[in-house]
Length: 270
Image (cartoon, rainbow, N blue to C red):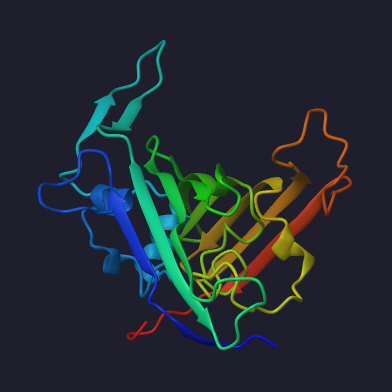
């Protein structure tokens, strides 16, 4: 049995790569909203109430001083509302892991530089459409591949005199659409080593990330009652089309639903 006895702190750099503010390197969401990371997170990626609201509204909220390109609608054209800079960010992760007993035939003290690198297109596309899109290079696989993707349309109305936020969602990982960090896509541990021992048992849904495509809808009434439902189909990466599903662990026949209903109650300390 291999026991993890020491691990160097993981270095994570999340930085803006297009038109960053002078002297600072910040993610595209922070650049768009004018808020520091702590404005939307307890500890990234854990969202606080402001962060959940930002995601609920489709990643489109902007600071008043955020530069945009706008044009009013006309008889033959739709309105235009674009960020003046591409909402691009980057992530670099490196790790060092040492185990109590060396695995035979290997070098103890595993260093990965990098462990992975991610590029993000994350921010507002239009007034009501935004995204969190991630492409990741993995050292062990030695190539870039699609990672978590969450594209949203969101809008607001009122029912019974109370606000209703509603929207549509397109994503490639069941639970990535969730607002709370209690499910698989955003659950603990937030960062994992490539070879340190981890539990081997997991629900099937944990194996579907980046292997499916899902489309669904969601709503939050009065900032309390939340519901969403998404239907998924297999969308195997690296497979010839039309896809026969051979050599893939799971193939969805028809549609596979994922749904969630929650009641949110905020307190003064939330």
